[in-house]
Amino acid sequence: MQSWASFLLAALAAQAPLAAAFAEAGTEAGQCEFDNIPVGVGYYWDPTCKNGMLGCDADGINMECRFCGAKDFMNISCPASSCKFPNDPFVSYYWDNECEMGKLGCWADGIHAQCRFCGRYPFTGLPCPEGAAPPNAAACTFENDPGIPHYWEPGCEMGKAGCNADGINVHCRFCGAGVYSVIPCPAEQVCEFKQKPTVPYYWDPDCKDGMLGCKADGIHNECRFCATRPFEDIPCPEAVAPPEHTCTWPVLGEPLVPHFWDPTCAMGKAGCWADGIHAECRFCGQGAYQGVLCPNTTTTTDVPDDAIMQAGAGQTQAHQFDPENQSQQSGTEPAIASAENQSQQFDTEPPTASVAKADDPEGTRGVTHEDWSPEKETPVSGVSGISRAMALLSGIVASLARHA
Image (cartoon, rainbow, N blue to C red; front, side, top):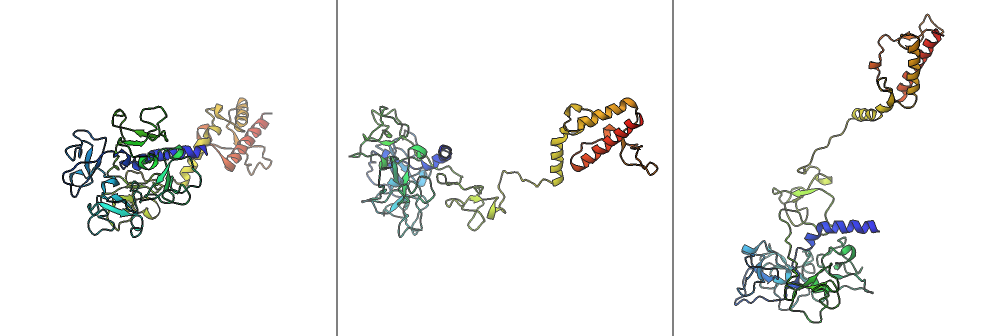
């Protein structure tokens, strides 16, 4: 169990930046003050804003007021709170830069084309991304408090890490503790304030009682104030935009099939739209996508059987007969070599084989191998090696017999 938990933590940590790709509503402790509400662009309160940062000081009054999600600010991700509803809807919603008139769910708030409904009828065909706003009155249903923080994640589906936490609602998700510590808890759902504070706050898994800003709600040590005096030295977390030109997968949701970014991808090409978000994300190299070559990989070829046998022989060669290096010998070869040395003490004739001549039916004289030499002897193995060794031994015995 412990090894599984370690694996889960490592895998979650590898994808944690994607899980934190949206700004926390808990940090939006202020309000922009526009004389005229801007049209066609999103905005939100970002306590991490500094002078000179793109989109900040959007209203000309508050540095934390920031434009996002359209026009020159397309690279600044808008949180769902950029949608402006008079009353919280009972359907999840999010900010979609690609939304436009006529697309399902767009113009959800009646103000911004990019504000989009998702997840529930009649938008069931439009899955919610992680970080979408929860519907009004949504809540997990536990018989007993699990002791692990949890929240409502519209982007949850069966199989995603932490989802179906209560065993009833698939959108109920564990976060912020134990093996789920790298799933960021949205503070606005997990912290429990009697009244919403005017100071930004967020969920900090490293918080401990007594640390500055921690236990902001008086209940959870991890609930932490940030950015505003006397917590100005505690930075609020910045929204992390998903990396560009990269496939985007949910936490622990990356497939085992290889994939890469292919700018030439288009609808209908094999493997394209692999992550369901980017047309350029493409599967390759395995299964139904074997015909799609993966870039930056080496092609492997089958190793011939004879090459494998040669490799195997090379591994055992040190244990075979070697006249020039008897220290490497093992098994019966040292005895054979020793007998050969003894025969060479009696005469200088080369060893003979055990095949008898026709004129020597008794086999008292061996047939001399005229072309034999130690240099020509090769390592032997298997049945053929045993036969040759026995032939050599018989020749030595015959030679000894002649000198007896």
